[in-house]
Length: 168
Image 1: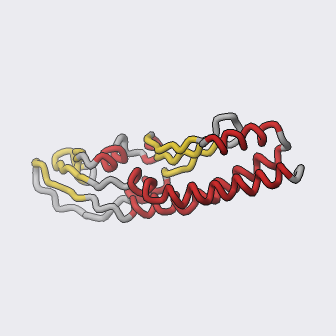
Image 2: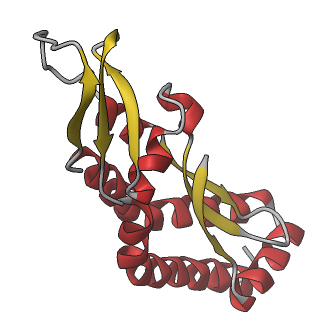
């Protein structure tokens, strides 16, 4: 698994302390609000991997003239991108992660993110090998969307703070 973690700033930590000591519906409301704030970033990361240019390079072995259709590697990686959120503790965090075990392709998502080539048999044929290389998609997409995520998270924290002040 690889991840980008955004940890709570002082305001969010103070909010988490108040939410932890307050009624459960405040924690649920804050969790929903932060999850909602993260959705555009999560969708952007999924789109980035689905549009990733993965190039193949022949590396030897017998010629292979089989089907060249995709088995959905990019789609499986996109499905494995998740938001892990914790607002119910004194150390709140939002963590975007790719659960590589869910992809079922070993460390391939890590190789794509690092821009490294990885070797694999062509269509399962152990006599025909190729290497492939993708472009980084994960961290740069999150960094690009971080200002929007932070702004929307701060708005959510302010709404919950107002609810706490009202005595909700």
